[in-house]
Length: 84
Image: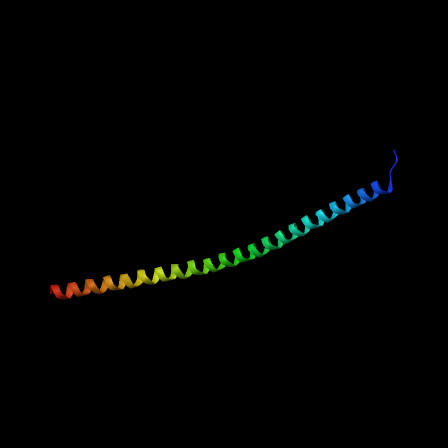
């Protein structure tokens, strides 16, 4: 098999093109990985904030129940006082 200079140049060009494609894919994968890391950090931050909101909501619910209990107690006292 005789290989001409043109054949060798064509093979080198094909290898260079494949290498460029590989680099482009690698760059895309790296960019995707960075995006995923950033998204993971944002999700973790949102989860932390959501946990804080849930705790505050639980505290608020406990306070509302306490106020309701106080109002019920005052109502009962007023009803008893008016029944005398």
